[in-house]
Each structure stands twice: as C-alpha cells, then as structure tokens.
Length: 393
Ligand SMILES: Cc1ncc(COP(=O)(O)O)c(C=O)c1O
Image (cartoon, rainbow, N blue to C red; front, side, top):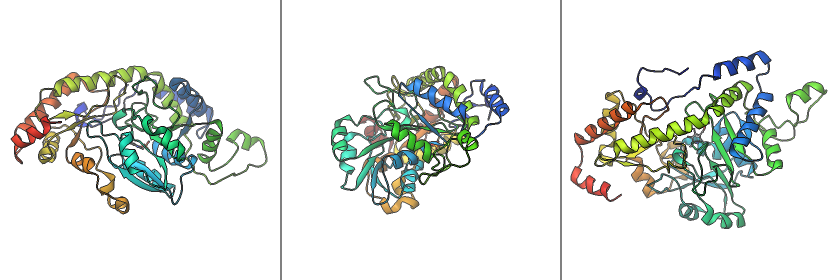
C-alpha cells in the first residue's frame, strides 16, 4: 500500500510512506473501542524504548507537544531564556513561548545547519535555563564540549530531534540515549509517522511520571483507574496531548518497518550526493549519512539565483522548498531578533529537494539535471563571482 498523491514523486517535497500494515492495525484498534490513551499507546512506548535502548519513552500527540512538555519538565518558565537556532521549524520557538520563556536565537554551522558547542556558548546569558539544539535533517548534535559547563549552571539540554529518529552520534550512541531530554516528531512526513505524534525520552522515572500526568490534563490516574474508582485527582496544570491508540497503532506498524525505511532514505540521499557532485555552484548540506536517517536533502545555491531556481524547478513539476525561513526574521518573533550572520546568508541559499522513500533513482537524476539547467541559465548576478565563492565552501 502506498499513498499516491501524484503520479510523480517529484510533485511532493515530502510525503508519507506506508508499509502496508497500517490499515489492519487501525482496524484492530477500532474494534477495541478504546481510542484515547490506552494499552496500544503504552505498548508503542515500550517498543520505542526497546528500539532506542532506553529505560522509558513518553508518547504525546505531536512533536511540538513533546518540546513543550519537555521544557516544562526541565523547569523552564516565565523569565527564563532558551537557546535555540533560528534555522528551525517555527514549532521549536512556539514550544518555548508556550512555557512563558523567551527564545535566544543562535547561529549555525553553514556546513551542517546545526548549532555547535561554540554557538551555544556564545548565546548563553545569566537567564538561560535550557538549550534546544535542533538535529537538522537528522544529524546528531554533539554538545559534549560544553556539557559540564551547562550542568554546572543548571542548564538543561532539550533536544529537538524531530528529524532524527533512528540517527546516531559519531561514537555510535543513538540519538535519545545521551542523557538529554530528547523529543521526536512522528508527523505525516517523518521517517516514522503516526499520522501525528511525538515522543519524549525522559531522564528519570520521576520525570516520566510527571510528563505522563501533564500530557493528560494533570490527572494522576489513567482511564481504567478513573472508571474503577469514584474520583480522580488533578495534581497540576496540564494539557490534553496524549497519543491516541489509533495513532499509536500506526506508529507500531511503522516501527516494525523502520530499519528498511532508514536504509532506503540513506540510499536515496547517497544517490542525490552522487547526482549533484559535478554541478557547479551546488553544495550539499552534510548530514553525516553514515550515522543519520536522512529527513531531507538540502543544497546551497548562490543567493542571487536561489529564488529563480526554486521557481524554475516548480515550473518543471519539481517541488523544491526552503527549510526554514529563519525565525528571528518572523514577525511573531521579532522581539527576540538579533544579527545572525551565517543564518542570514543561508536563508537566501538553501533549497530542499524532493525527498521521501517513494523516489526512484530516475527521479533523482531528473532533479539534478533540472537543478543544473536552472543554474546554468539563471539570469541574475555574476556567475563567475558566485562560482568562486561557492568553490571556497
Ligand atoms: C525541527 C522541528 N521541530 C519540531 C517540529 C514539530 O513536530 P510536529 O509537527 O510533530 O508537531 C517539527 C515538525 O516538522 C520540526 O521539523
């Protein structure tokens, strides 16, 4: 079973991939009559924990909710600052604002689009309460060089690993196993989808218990206990952002097929790398494909040509995109804006090529050829000057 949204995979920048077992899983859960939080959700949590090799995982409704709840568990609230790259999906920033804290935007390394320990160090202030590295494209972020310093200052690392389920660090440890509060997204276009969903790797059993309460309106008891007894207690402020059994059923089916999809994504990303290698003025953003499960495939093209190239690809039926317009330039976040030179340069250069498991090698060749042609004939700027600049990368 595949989701056919168009005859060509190129007409979608990203799209869900189904393994074929999801429909039966949903039907099985529909027949149980239990659709909110339930046994299926808890089984999904156990299977996620086993896959990652961690003690526990708390499933929630979305990746955004995972970030919000993880920040709350880290003690983040009004008056605090959270360091976050500007080059991320706006969900990272909205999760920070939802706690009452303020974002402190950090710059990124132009070769990986991720923060480094140096970027984080430069953004710390006396009010920093948490740091949110974004594992852009699925690449692990290593903050080990400042881990001791952060711990000494009581600063918690909340990883936005929305793109990075299944990826590993250079030492081989899986993302989610390094002691940070790690948050995953299982939305429609992620390597593992629940339709919508998310998960948090908690640091301690107490933290797991708190997250489980907060995701269910602050109530202490699960549904079965509430039904069995004559009352229930609300322990703290909470939200309704549990993962439904129906979504968990999709997630379980997806997890069973995940190794196949992980290697397919790696193979497709490598095909892109080979196809793009000889094209002047194009540099591929490195996501450490040997250890990562690629979420996307992003290139940098000379800034004067990016918008033209984007338009030409679309005219050619190829849905390129931009991930992401920087958040420090968004109207809603302007109060926290400050100059970020690398991010501002990247903002005009990055282009996400169609990337999802239904692509064929033929599709990838077609994108590479179309990209080369669009750049060859791009009208603006001096290609000689831009070519030199790109060659220096
Ligand atoms: C970097 C990043 N963070 C957070 C999220 C939010 O995840 P969700 O869509 O599951 O709420 C996304 C979703 O695409 C994302 O790309």
